Image (cartoon, rainbow, N blue to C red; front, top):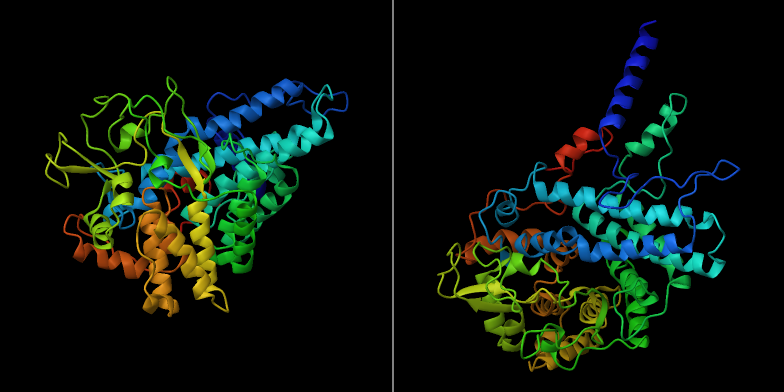
Length: 507
């Protein structure tokens, strides 16, 4: 009797939880109905009645990269730039300062927001992947079905890649939880409260999605870099094969070469990647030849993220009364100056007169400059990143090809009028790796790469524990970086909701 009573109590608790909370891996939020359209004669739920509904849902997936700018862009820059040596937090807010002084805890609202929203993105992708085969009126042909699935799998891979890099072990969810009943509660319960998979398992799922998507994703277009194309899948495959859990440098090189074969190349003029026209009414270019994937914002329907980092050049005084995130660090500025890298520094950092002086005198205050108007594109994947990743693979593979790696770095430097690497650097693997890391820092500052570069190459402790002493403007370090710092904490609120989640070590 006692056992039965405990079981009844357990079931009542679970039903209560499910009745009062949202399961992020099942119920996508923010304007997308998760109600079915009824059932077929065989009892299968109808999710999409016709092709028009599928197209609308896919449009909604693409819209996520524009509408949910927090985790796709703003928070990612906070993690990758302010939690590294490129930037300070920018404000003294309790949610952002811990990324600068290394005092992040599981209660941090940024990591809580991002964990939930990545799972919501994955849930949207799952909904399309799982239900596209069962469109009620049979108006979607087999070729279209394969294309829809491929695009959704690329989107799922993008979300899962960022999530696993930030948190490490995460729930790998590729299903939709069934409706819960008294009869199936013990079977369905794990679907609502999933366990974490290992990092390798997460990367293997990302790999599987991308390899499958390669066959059926749309071909790329030189005039539209907003779609989840075969080239996006190739770029993401190159990036995941550089990561430790499934590292394969030969495949990094293979997929970067495939992007080159697709026609991607460095822009002749570095500034044109970010520049506005003379009247600040539009960009000089969209869909540059080195852009692989970007979210675009046209005049009249712009992004709001630019307000978080500096001025909107198309509306100069708009929202410029409060301190901004991602303030460029003295250490980064000094690195540009030491290198004589004026071209990239001028496109990455701009000085204004500010109304605050948190890190610098208000009269000469630096701001990150790569998102400089409400119509600036948010570039998610850029060929220069992938090209330098190939150089990294050439350096780090079992039989290094330092000459070929140096040639790539020299190409990137030549564009911004910098001299080729010295022969003394080209001759040593460690010196080449240092040069590669510096080149990536200068080329890709404020594009969401720096922290992940340090993590991927095991440089977190060496770089970050030293920067506080040499950068006089950085807030005092609260905790030293150690082997547990490579992953951020699992949000405590999510652990409280899901007893199957385990906190990362060190938090």
